[in-house]
Image (cartoon, rainbow, N blue to C red):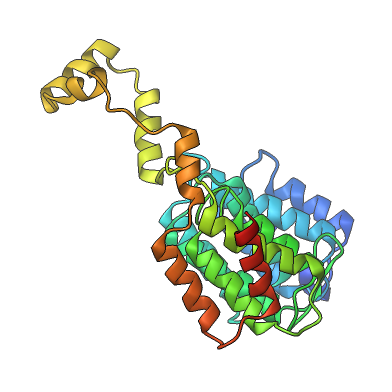
Length: 309
């Protein structure tokens, strides 16, 4: 980071606001080549904490620049490593208060743009989203509102984006921890002035966990992605040399790779199998429903949906 950028960021935030013109200057100073240094990223976070008023232009800049830093600036691009995940969580927790809307938007952006993230960041995002819905207040990036104690249209949109993001617990489907979050939010806001779309998301989200199909190979670890990238970039030996080394290190590998492969269930069979609610899943659902000693309107809608389906 140039000294000039650090001084500029402090000066811009001195009055608690940042104009569209100042954001443009910051963008030019910090991001002329499409890359953000860690020092610049930390300066942007520090400026965000100074601001009393955060425009949509500011949130756009923060989300784009810091999302790029977290997701794509360590090889392999698209895979957030443990160090960057820890750095992001530390920056968000810096002031010890609830995530601001800009920070919530940044978290969701990371999950939408990344191919995978460490489990610790997945768990952290679930807890922060839950807090944002239950306790957050104020305008959102797209003009909606966060409200404490109930679930608004804007909060439904955030939840939907997060749980179906590529780097979420279960890409293109809902994971168990996410389904349990939906139940906790439902219980905490039962009887509140919730947006009608919240019941739809609750029903669809939990049903998706119980019946949805998710490709187990949709996400690979960052370590595996690094190995694959290193192999693709390695020009030091021929393919023949590589295969010879592989045969020497693993004598039976060619039988596994080139021999007759065991029959694998078709995608249609896998989808059909996932659609069936298992005994363990039924026990999980019963435990959630029995927790408050009643079947509320959300649970009834879920049970009706499952029965009809």
